[in-house]
Length: 386
Image 1 (cartoon, rainbow, N blue to C red):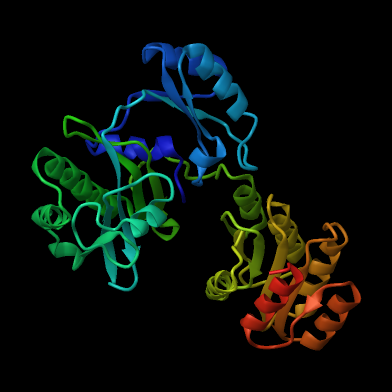
Image 2: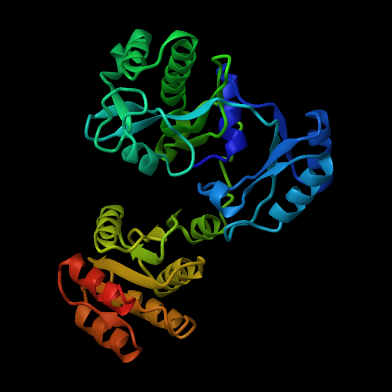
């Protein structure tokens, strides 16, 4: 489960970590009233469970309550192809600089890691990589410093402080950011989080740290033991994610141009990696799991094709017990409704594969018989002009 910004900030505030004053508005009038309480000027933010809002116009600086109402009215019409049910109206914070701070799960170290970059905000990784000497430390390859938090039961707060001191922080700023870092780690353990990211973390001229944004991703598999938390536990805000859930599918919205349908998580992630290696960008990731039926496959393809920006689709499925003919029938059902310039490449191996291939080819799909997903990705890239 991915939280909305205001939900993530509620979690931070609960742990005593500083967030801007403000409130959630569901109508323009509510947004105006909150801005009035804040003194007139405010920042109005669309509450959607994905990033890139700043560059795409989802964050608006309002200089008056009237401006806040207008911004709210516009954002509630939808943003980035998603419905917007609420906006967050916050005070404007004067910061001296913006940093990046997060905790996440890293399979490479077998546990959690704390990540810090001296410069945060839009395109943080690109910015830090281009100027890695921001704090005089020795950033890693990505430009972001990392501290493994393992073994999980022996991590101590002074380790976080030493790590940030090594990154060049000192004085009150060091104490503030270390408090944030330790707080994120504790929240991660308490709520079974896989990511808690603050980008940007605002550092004020008087040395205070304040979370200007917050992204929280919780492990759905551990939901049964998670304590009460005022975040959406039942209904995702993203319409594609919601529709996938209704179909019994898992869907992850990304920001690229290739829609991906895979019959398993591992196969899907492999496909995403290869798509990126080929210079394309995944627009989404949908996992069908087992039990593929004609209706399920049709719904899956229709779903990934419906996301704005999708210019090509790759279906990568393995048929064990299930017949691939059912999967092919589902793809065929949707092909006729897709724009002519959106190619569909299918790699389907397994039970009744030959019959499935013949059916797909007869209807205009591009079939790849190779066992190598690279071949399917190359085929799609060529069709997309990549």
